Image 1 (cartoon, rainbow, N blue to C red):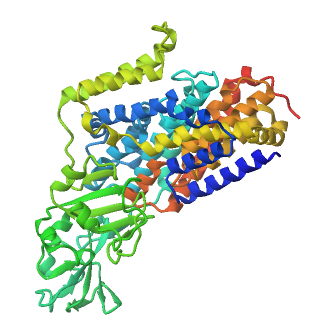
Image 2: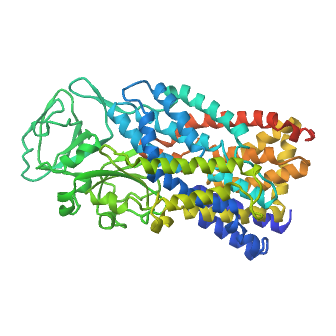
Image 3: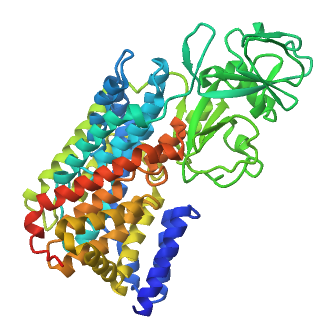
Length: 609
């Protein structure tokens, strides 16, 4: 192996470690590695920047804005409310109504935007009908991922592969990937429908004094202050006359934990009352005389006085306080809101979180006023901002119809474009029609044009553009050929099935620990080298890496939608492993079987050892 090959291999291993440990944002990581390859002459300056002008990458940028236009129109909010039943029913029935439609929408729009819109609405619906939210949010994320494998525009991963294909003079139609993706989707949805009852966790519940079972979001800690009217009051079977609307789960006294059973307890100064409750009621409790919410005991009294709402937010990559603690980052001064609870890694923390570091995907419950959403609702520092009160969808029907018509025309144009003649040498492809859709959405003011840069994930775009350079380095150094030959030698005895299975496994394993776009970029030169070394058409290999790079179910860090629902639903890492690993294996098996069957004519020339 040459020095260049060893150098590229070591750099890529280092890059994978940085991405897997989340020490640096993916875009900057890939850009620095690409710069290193250019500095050592492995790629040329032209190869370094070619990804920044690639049509696939620019199409991803345009589709961010198209998705934002559809989101702001209110069409998706209206649709999910139509999908959700208006009475309590079984989880199976809810999923059967919801998941196929969500997957279909996700095949046409950015799946992160879909989860950001649907997750809070589904959560509020589940709370209203007392349905287990943990049975719904992971399926929501998985359905959007599966839907994204069905069309060229279903996920940015497919467009990354498409862009690299065009650079190598190959092409892919809008629904080429659907030949396999739809089968993967159907089998995946069947698995989710029948496994949810057994593999997904149940929401924790507590039986109240009336014998009804209630789902509790948090256990809030309230401190009994000096000269409080609570001092001397009795807690009888979890009830206190001064808190008629709330139960008391337990009492902390001088470091001891007093659980409420059948005994009566007389309250003392300094006692901490653990009150289970839904977040919508907390702003009223903060105004109750004689008790102070422990998590905001040091908050600005003026802020607490004017606070009239509880808001839920999920931290995005652009949040400036990432990897800092509350002591290091003054959240209250920056955003005019006091944190009353943090959901992190499936655990809910309602006190003593001053030394906890903020991480992407953390779910924060904030006590604030009505100005917060108007001030930060369009900010890219939060994945979503949801008022815990009932959500009202926009009611401008003209905007909904305009957005839907533009989206339908874009998809129809991209589908039929390959059969239409070129216009002055311009190919009527996905890029062409997505650009027209963006023009129309701007014309109809479906998103604020002056703030358009806020709706584009620049880190994703830089990661995609830099990935082209990393891919070129793998090809130039011979690493892609070496890995391709190794996979061929390992799986050669099994023919096409073995080779597709090996390529899928390597790609899927990589995407669970780094971004899906980076995984696709690393797998592409290997897939192309395998096809070239075997002397066969590469399309089956491209389809394989499209599905494998997107099919990230086993960890919350592999896909952004998983990270978002982990926070909102309070899932633990092991929940994704439990339900996601079998689904990943199913997708692997289905792809391994059907890619060779569907593309048998392209693979019949593959030799066996």
